[in-house]
Image (cartoon, rainbow, N blue to C red; front, side, top):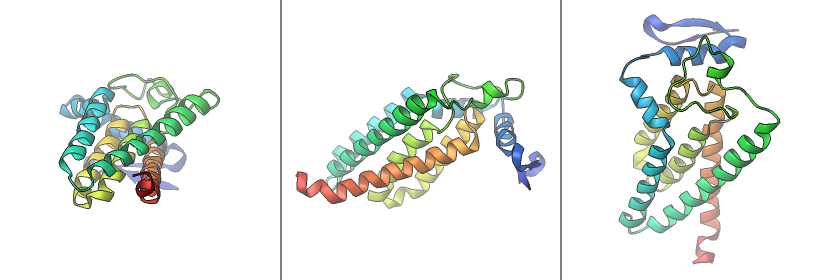
Length: 197
């Protein structure tokens, strides 16, 4: 089976079994040495992401008079699920026994790492899981920000591929996990918020 990845002059036909690394190579080389490198490093920089989401949660808590507290609680539940399951269980727990090498480690001659060189297992993407868990909650309460949420999710996914830190399957799995955490947090809130308050 063959697929076409890329666009314009950068199109490339790849065989299915090589699609993972070929996709990473494509995005790793795309606009390399330009402002895209700075943008993807910023989007992947954990202190920046943490500060952004803390400020966003605080802003929602204080500015949304109707649902601010519910949203902040739900975001906290969602990111807690991410921390326990993705970071704790999958990355640190199971990652000790089944470590999928990051693309820049597995293919050092083909992938140029950008940003912090993480060495833990590449599967799944914590950046995608964390961002999508929080975006899912915010979009549930404020659906008008769906276009912004989609742009942020795509930007995060592209950053993880461009920086050589993840395969496409890592990014997709992280996104799915994040959405599930957000939905579980929303379910918990809808089931128990009025009981607890």
